Image 1 (cartoon, rainbow, N blue to C red):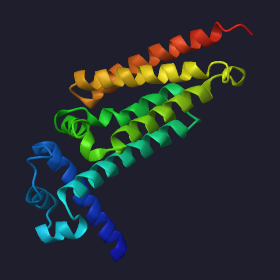
Image 2 (image 1 turned 60 degrees about the horizontal axis):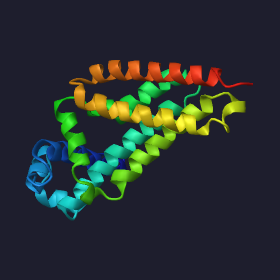
Image 3 (image 1 turned 180 degrees about the vertical axis):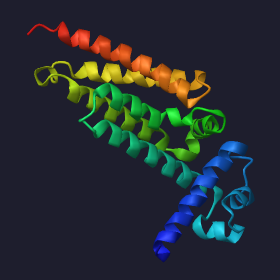
Length: 200
């Protein structure tokens, strides 16, 4: 591995450790010493990468959200697979991975610090919602896409609301996936019926 590659890998390791440390202790209580210990790096080494706790927090959350968005985008873009499967996988990447004791703490951490994360706290959810809407719209029959554009957005917003509710009820990622699968199946069934009722 090159020096640049190992340096990038080290930085990613620090960001992963930081996110889990902030989730465990909360942003206010977590210290740079706590993060340094978790990342197995010296405190001066940590400050070499990040000038402040706020910078570290923002970088850790940005990395996590970038990864989630990219994974969801890859899932939705694979049009060789049924829309149902792509939606379930995308929601698993975006929401399902934040189900469970510690990972749920990560989601709470992100949700409870919009002041530290502005504007990304709103930009990433909007970006994901657009991905889902576009995937649903692209799956509609070509002659209905223009006339039923709002329908794709309605279905996407309903799926997002369902995912948010399920995330708070499910105790495991598997439970989230099972319930989200039911939600996706029901909404796609309703969508297909609605599209089928449109007069030609």
